[in-house]
Image 1 (cartoon, helix red, strand yellow):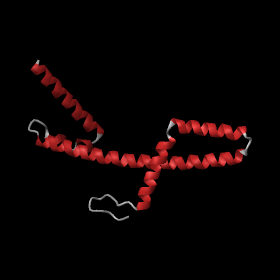
Image 2 (tube, helix red, strand yellow; image 1 turned 120 degrees about the vertical axis):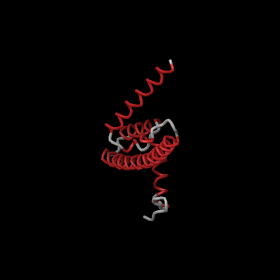
Image 3 (cartoon, helix red, strand yellow; image 1 turned 135 degrees about the vertical axis):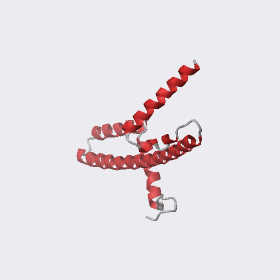
Length: 136
């Protein structure tokens, strides 16, 4: 795939169409009325005494297809969430660096180990308690 200058790969028209189709189908299939419709469809199928093998095959194909569409939709949402998280962290880092009272070492904290983040959080909470006590 070709990439633009911003490191985001350009998506083909077919890929974009597939994503839109996955989005629409996964949103449609998640609606409660559609789920009730599938149940009614299966009950009707059995009531008409049609071949169970054909129903099983059709439902298996639908289940596999819907699973792939939902997973594709989830992947797209996670990519968007990650992009927003990175932007939010960049903004917060800028505010920390620009603030005279803030400690600049907190910029980029999200990249450190969890134990370091927890320790910094405890320090921040202790400072907040001390500030509240001094103001009271």
